[in-house]
Amino acid sequence: MCAPTGFGALYQSGDWKGEKHVPVIHSPEKVKKGEAFEVKVNIGEEIPHPNTLEHHIKWIKVYFQGEGDKFPVEIGNYNFTSHGEYGVFTEPEVTVKFKIEKSGTIYATSYCNIHGLWENSKEIKVE
Image (cartoon, one colour):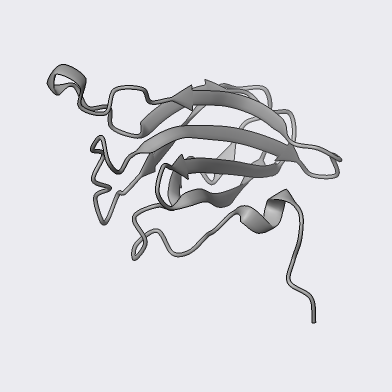
């Protein structure tokens, strides 16, 4: 059996309650068609991520893929650029507000400068 190849094979995942690098997605289970709602994504909710100059989250990206759609839509790309300069440390957490027309899946990806790429997903229904 061959190991998976391609860019997707570079992403790691896991249970965010036991792994500090997995993006945690907070969103409603159901939303109304065309009505704006908030999605919060953070890293290190149960086990804090260090966020030091030596070990930090560089970015989080959020996507949505509607049921039956061939590709996801990038909702946002959030860069964290302060990792201790003059005592300023960013925390890897974002909140984004958007509207959808149909049910689908929210995807969140992130990058740790030491531990690489991470992913998570959550289904959302439109009523």
